[in-house]
Length: 111
Figure 1 (cartoon, rainbow, N blue to C red):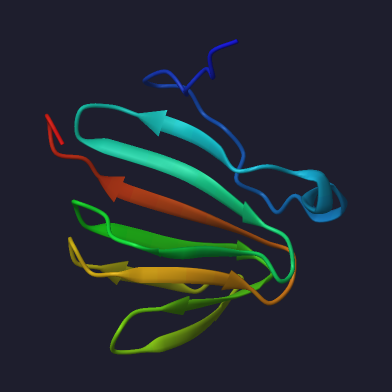
Figure 2 (cartoon, rainbow, N blue to C red):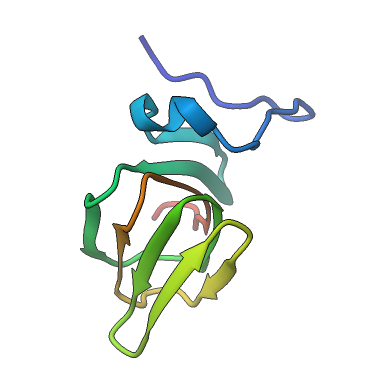
């Protein structure tokens, strides 16, 4: 079954998942020609290995705590923290606790 993305003009909740966080999974909320938005869910101790995004990204920690690493810095993030990263910068994430974060990526047509 194909994942349904949020249609234009629709709304969704980004409230903390709370007790549901332990069983939640990463979910793409929106994918268009220019933009992709994903709620990334990582359980404590899990990580996303180093990777690069072809466009700029933003990360907003919605709940929990994570470490966002680049070759030049490590940022411990908690609920409410927000960061921006330029295109092509290698980065990785590690969950210090069960965590969810909103990741927004600029997508270039044809990328």
